[in-house]
Length: 331
Image 1: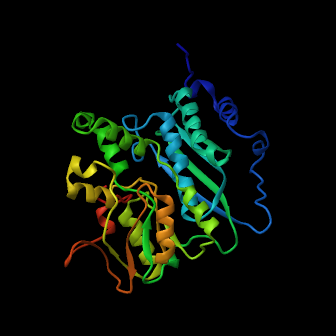
Image 2 (image 1 turned 30 degrees about the horizontal axis):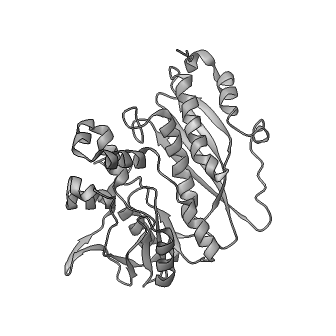
Image 3 (image 1 turned 90 degrees about the vertical axis):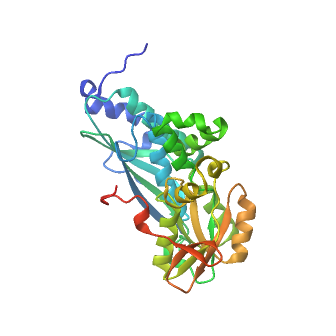
């Protein structure tokens, strides 16, 4: 059995050498990475923080899954801006008794998520901490004036989601309560767990938008929940929304019932799909091209309210307070 030293025994410089092996040689060695995005490009920068005990723990994610999710969260933010990824930097704070194996597995997960998009790890920083913390900064490029903005929606736009919602929450519940796995269809439960541990950033969608030449779409990722994404888009654009349908993962409604499935789709979070507002004709082309759960779920309105239409005349208002919020008394 391979023995891995603890980080307190390894020391900072030796640990840096280990993690630098995951980076391109020319990207490291100075105080910053020099990036030439090319003429006629705008640089997009986003940062996301994952904290042990808040975003992940040993019950819900293996170390490689932690790395994958950290990369996916940032790539998803780039996708929501319509940007093509250039790479990431990694800020990593760790307890001294953490195993080197854990660290290297995290980096393997980072690389596994980044490699399909040819986005390297460009460097970062290390520190000691009572709990593990990953602070990722992602860099991307977009043509001038082509970035997707939350404020670009107009009344009468179709609201599109790029995939079903609720699978990640279902996977998390199964991981936290393994006894429930016996009550769920095995194939579906594994799909839901995979959706939680290995979410797919929808950079393919924004590549399509660039290919189609659609610059006016408003966009946001749904990592904090679909309701949160729709509410944020509407608030930034000064519009309301009428939601008429929710695409759910296969089998979810049969497992937990329609009410619970609806709540998980709206407020469960961490599905890492995109919510987009764009003209209906473009929305229909996009959803037909994407398939696999992509759907028009409603439309933006001139009225300021945001609601789900459960049945004719029966409405449910969407609320920020119903989902997860850092520092909220309920969370």
